[in-house]
Length: 358
Image (cartoon, rainbow, N blue to C red; front, side, top):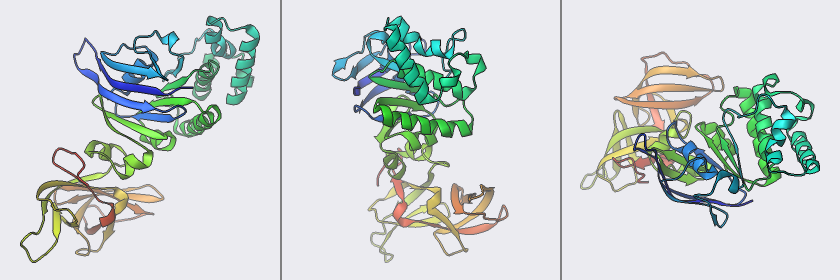
């Protein structure tokens, strides 16, 4: 296995002139499971295709281990890629699909048999080896695509949204299978997705991309508990972090003695010596409902979403949208005014540009 390093990777497509990637630099240590997360069009698949050699970077370098592979052919990089649409040969059996790359490399027949048997046992494909892709379910086809990658024993595995075509139950099952596979192989894996649940549950670290730029790189806990900017704060979480536009008043020269941040109908004490526009970030689970006049301010209920174990309450706090996550079932009519409290220890602050202040 090997590490993967990107150094100021930039990719511009001639047809648009718009950079799909802009100076992306990161290192994936040997054996790490890295998730590249971002919305559609952020450049995550382009980055993966550059690593695989399917796209030529406009600038920058790609290293696998200590070897610069920026301009090497895909076959020379020793990576295996699992695609979103599985890319199986419809006229070949499962056995033939898994063995195909090995046959093209002229691996001895006995070794092919051993590797195919080992991969099919690991993925539960033993009874399906003589079937063709059309006879398989989506989950089974995905397992065949994984098997085809595993038998090559590559230095790096690349996954391009491999679970997006599966239903919710199968996605959950396949996430567990992929994590089990990673533990068994101890392989370097780079996994692209727009699904933050996949990112948070699978990645040892997450690289968040937006508009071709690397916005944050860290553990799932890092990006959730301490987002680097407003984009990451809003994107991570379901729903994302509440961002309220406010004006900070340090309280200097006043008898109040404490700084406050006024956001619509909410007033929150802050421990920052800051004046002027300041954005407040608070996760829905750190907003609680209370009686009128008992918390940071009052808000009007707009929509209530009961989810069984919890309820999402969408509110208007003086023109500022706020979502509160309330445990259990919470019934309140639309249009009613209720009080809100925020957890003072779990607040985030961003400047007018969206950069993190504290």
